[in-house]
Amino acid sequence: MIERNKIIGVLGGMGPEASSTLYRKIIKYSQNEYNAVQDCDYPPIIINSLTLFGFDETGITDHDLVKSQLIEGVQQLEKAGSDLIIIGCNTVHYYFDEMQNAVNVPIFNIIEETKKRVIEFGYKKIGLFASESTNKLQLYQKRFKEAGIEVITSNEEHQKIQNLVIKHVMAGKRENTEDIIFLKDIARDLVNKGAEAIVMGCTEIPLAINQSHTDIKLFDTIEIIVQSAVDYSLVKS
Image: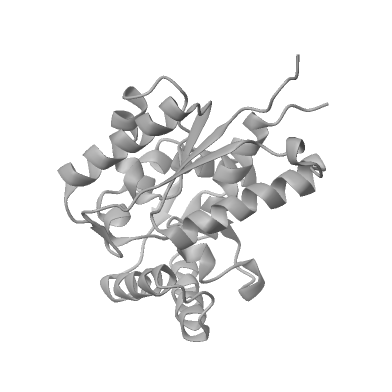
């Protein structure tokens, strides 16, 4: 009997650009860490790309509508045969418990997986790039506080800039020079306030800026959730 790799279900479309990057990172990580070559070496992947209503570059605009679509989305992935589920959006993890309670397969929590990585590095103060909703709902602040990690967030003006950068990426404008300059300025401001590193807590942000653009340590939440999922999926020989 052939031992197959576990099927990764991806709840994506939030937004499509970030989801496409997530898929490519799964492939690249499988090659780099598991020497994947043949098709059967890679994790099986099912992608459910939601055309999510009640959501924009600021985050959630209609809670009930968003929650119902997310629950239906993870249930579809489970019915399709997923062994685990990851979600290509930080903000919608506000409904993580409701989604997990709606299915029997594990959903990997991008915020929890990022927290584990920050703990490994020993950081105690983290700056946060995030959508407006993620900040207002304090998704990272609450989870990181449990581990004794302080989260330093942007002021209102800098949050508006992040919203604009997110919108640019959603429209396909990656690594825009002006956006990189703005984000580097915001990162330096967060460091001046005590941050030891920056968590890119919106999956659009790593498409706008990456580690090659700055000496400040950046945690790419897409990369982190991808690594967790692939490590769970692939059967080591």
